Length: 287
Image 1 (tube, one colour):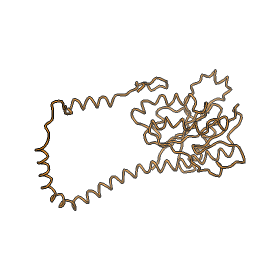
Image 2: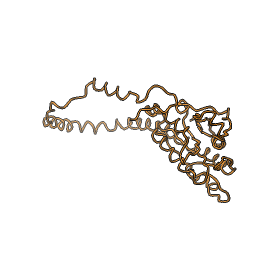
Image 3: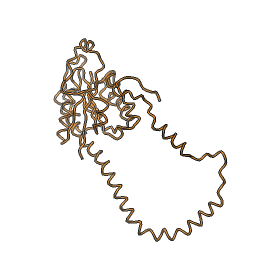
Image 4: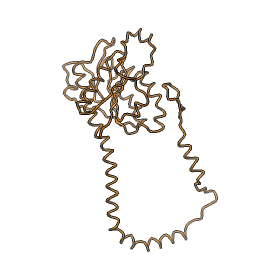
């Protein structure tokens, strides 16, 4: 089966974008296709100018809620901010309440790669704090593990990455760019993630087929079991009659479920806890 992978990343100075392109190469190496996206920017241009941030890549579109619903698997590139994701990432996920209420992302594979300023700046915690978004949506987190053990265990140079995902160090002033080794690790993550996602999504398809085969087998066994069922009918009828005669009458306080009650419950279930406004904002209903 074919499936679509979206690589959604945020980058102020381009470090995560560079990693994302390497991850994309890894996905393609595995024989699959991945599209790059950017988390929407929340900072005004005058602030970005003061930060000396370069222009955003024009070849990478901005992700929307539709991106999440139209793709089957995701790799999220996240820079750290005090050991967790930046406001841009939180704002994006904060607007997904409607998708959460409908379970639109449930069962989709997802991985994470990061960029931090220093070695202890959040290579692992940034991913771990991102997991909260994934688990609430029912996304299947795919850890990197030690798929690139040779590169990950290389102590001849300082480098990013962890079992949680690929990573790079940007240095305090953003002057350090991803190294060759870090890009190799990112590429390997893209490759291994694509293969794992294919297995997960393929297993779902195979599972549906297995259910059908099980039904066919059950049908084939029905004929063979008819004689046993007929032999047991008399005993079952006697038992049912005895149970009926000994049953305790229902009290007046017991209220059977009516059609009106069912309709009311269905209406409650279908009610959305969020407004129909799908714009990116911080407004949401506290459940």
